[in-house]
Image (tube, rainbow, N blue to C red):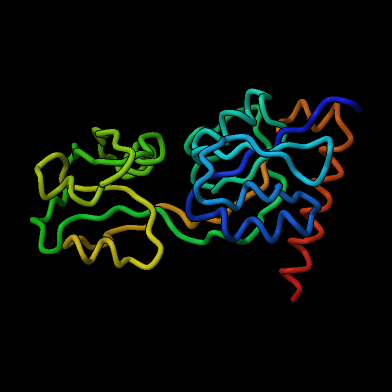
Length: 217
């Protein structure tokens, strides 16, 4: 094999936890990766046949699904939001734990029996499915951040967002009203690459062994 493998990793909350797991599997970025002033999106690794790309979490899934990257790490929220047919998530890495929840202003007027709600979120598909299962049509206002101020500014009565400690919700006068899903980071691979490139399968097995060790510990 002479073609380079591309491994996609997300910016943000998962990355710090992912790096030690990646290192144990033999995926180690060059020193320049750790330079906080470095704005590059592509980095070499200690493997001559592999490079890393560091992109937004949603873009990790897109690069891997379309074969521009062969492997990646991303939260299960992203996998469920996009549901790409070419995306396979063989290993739960058991890192990046949080959950996706519905939240609204504390003391908000009850909307029992409502058939339509406006919700601010960057997860429109998961949000619609959650409310449809309860007989409610959700009008989703797509935001990529600052979800917590949407109710205060009258943009939407509720939000759907990731919750870790709940501190950000409390600081903005919001409370969780329902939990949509628990989230962990997963190793994802492109299905076609898994079938055609034995290096991809070898990496899957390496990450699987590490995950099993962590579970057994």
